[in-house]
Amino acid sequence: MNHLHTCLYLEKNGSVQVSLDCPGNVFLMKDTEYKKYSTGEEFKAIGGLVTTRKKVLHVPKEGTWHLVIDNNEGQESINVALNITNGRQISENEMNEQPPEEKPPQTKPRKKDPVPDDKEHRKFLQNEIIKKINEISLEGLAFLIDQAKTLLHNQEMDKINNEVTDYDDEYVIRALPKNKKKADVNPNRIDIEEHSENTFFLVMCGTRKILSRQELRIIVDMSHQPMNDAAFSKNLFEWLKIRRNDILFDAKIRSYDHPVWPALRRFLRSRYKAKK
Image 1: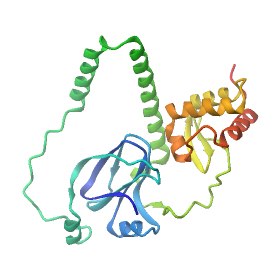
Image 2 (image 1 turned 60 degrees about the vertical axis):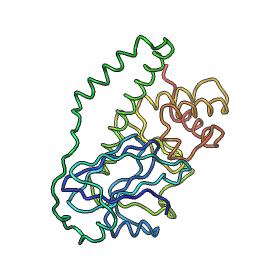
Image 3 (image 1 turned 90 degrees about the vertical axis):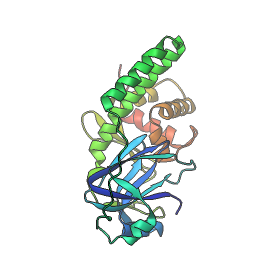
Image 4 (image 1 turned 180 degrees about the vertical axis):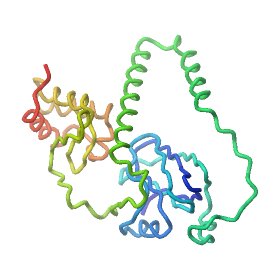
């Protein structure tokens, strides 16, 4: 099975921050589960699909772990960076030589590189931005403001996603091998499920993705605009590509001529009214 793989030794409450340049599956698993993963069997692991730039995985107990990263059957290659807390990378030979769940042989502690203080680093970056402001054109400033709004919105959605899924805090998350499908997922179903007052699930193409109330309102208003299905499909696809590309990625939708868009429009128009 095509994937990136490395071995880690992590102390209790240790963690690894994984930085990706595109969405992918990120798993931490024990040796027996990695063997199952490698042969396509059902396995248990910490983690799952990551659509954000960075994700932190915590372990519930000290020991050796396999870190596995794959691109969720996508065509893109993935560039990965790791930041390990209370642990270190180890070789596969070193991992195989150790009895499971035992601490590795004690070695003389190495001098760690100084970790930059978050507040100081933030201040440094803010000063760098201020230095460049006067050199940026009006068009560039408008673009930066738009990108900042997008970043803030995505941070809020990441927070909501973590509160709903919360898969990092529990070990023994069951993941299905890629050659199996969940029996209860109907790829033809389109629905909006209310999760709370301000969060909703968009169900389509066999996926369930969180929408904020504001995002749902934008999509509903778009569905009621005086345009044909083709124009709606193109407008919604372009909006999602900029604001919520994770929805397109998970649903495996690559263009605006997908048949789900007209069907989604009819559903939204029958369920919701445009806000005046």
